[in-house]
Amino acid sequence: MTSIYSISGGKADVPKKETYYVVYQAKFGNGLTADVAYTNESGKETELKEVSGTWGKTVVLKSGTHAKLKTLATAATDAKGEYKILVDGKVVSEYVLSGKRLNYTFSFDLP
Image (cartoon, rainbow, N blue to C red; front, side):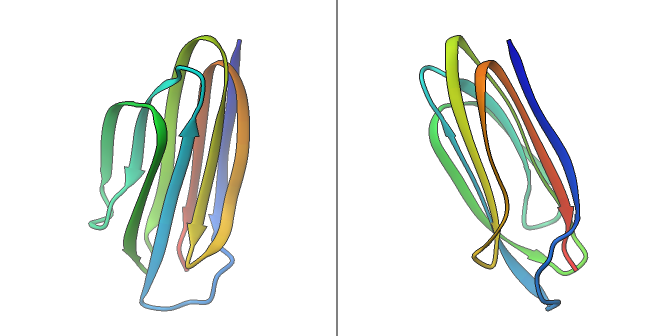
């Protein structure tokens, strides 16, 4: 079974300023292995292969940046993936998926 969560969050509901601390977090349970792509500090996409367990990355992004976290995780048996994105400590996305194939994508724009 494939579980999919794909949302464009629009503009993040945070005060406008020069730069933002964006924290990407994912926890891949029960044998899940994931490919992860996220927006890095230069505004480009960084891709990681075969990520498992607990993963996190903090980046500083400029005002107006389009940010995204995209993961595709697979396992031999049903497993749970937990995802969270924070901007300056405020949660802008938090979601849990279950299944053998988990596809999570969340994108948003910084003010």
